[in-house]
Length: 154
Image (cartoon, rainbow, N blue to C red; front, side):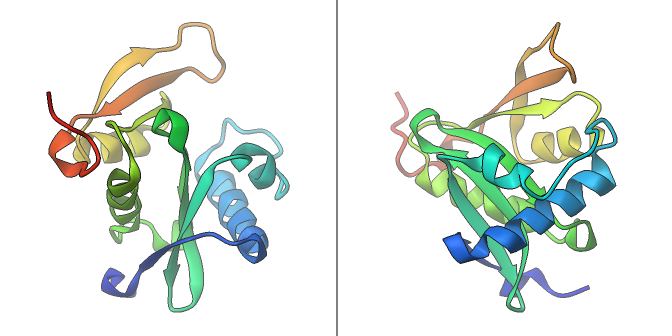
């Protein structure tokens, strides 16, 4: 596949919505069997009010991250399945670290073992879990505090 050194991480614009929604839908169809009947319109609903950064490779949006800045919370991180395992997710996480004011937190579905392994490799640790939600999830927090220029170590 293509080298990821040409990946650009940029703020998403309104005109990117269709491509972002397609990445979201395609990724969920391929990797989230627990999501019944995902639709392209889910993207706008699920990312509303969040900063969305897009990963662009050869003029194509191949992934994105949506970040709720007020809580330093990553809500969505999705890579087009055709572009997985190229370091794009790591680049998106690294970019959010530059914006966050405290270590990032996120939720990850327990069944999503690939994502859990990815987040652990990026320095995240499990700090909580749901007991009654469906699907069940873990809450993770980034441990790499030194990677946050806007976070003051105490």
